[in-house]
Length: 108
Image 1 (spheres, helix red, strand yellow):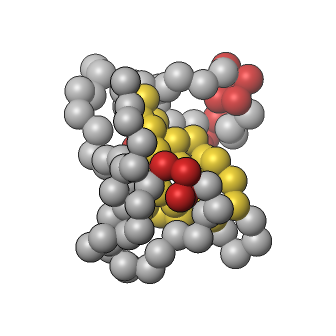
Image 2: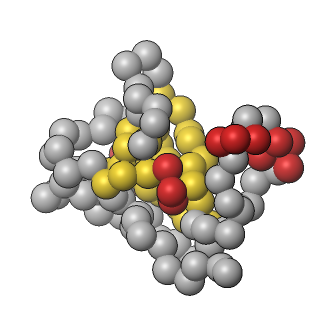
């Protein structure tokens, strides 16, 4: 069954449930919308269901900044209030307000 509502929203800070990174949501797919090659590269015992929202994140860890694509089941809201330092944040969002980044671009 396809879930109809995303749990997380644009500008929200989230962190990965298992891996040490966090990021800001900048796009959401209602269900898996990446390549089969990408999906097949995930170890079978860790592959998430495709029938759930997947989130595009401006992500960071202790060593780098990158874009991550993560299933809803693998995310947790980050209420720490700590800013995300990803260098692309100002291209899409304003300054953090109450733990959330306000969207600063017009979407279709």
